[in-house]
Length: 152
Figure 1: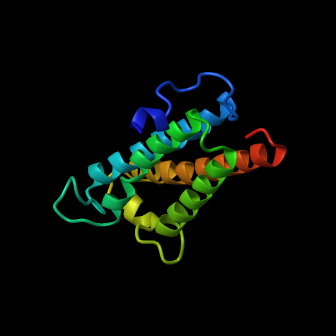
Figure 2: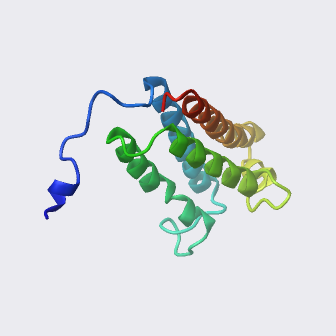
């Protein structure tokens, strides 16, 4: 049996269970996450491979991008639905909150704000972190709402 027999060659363009608005809840945290990763590089702390030779939390956090790509493929091929995304976003929100704003944070707010000479840039960087956390929480709630209503 060939791989093309098991996987659809063409992705469905209609009959998706997720609303177009839902995909905005995927794009916004992706953009904010990329901005946060770029911020790591600009301020130069908590940076790991591939920017430096050290493997750390930064390195592992980059796995979110291939996970998002696979998740989007699975959504577009109707293999996962809103329940999957509600869980994906809830787990992401928990991880982000743990690593950035919990009492056990690996990268607490001062590590984001203080490295900048101009505090406005530091607070902007931390606002991106908070926006990222909020966007995945909202995405999880919206996904759970679609799942509960039976729309996804």
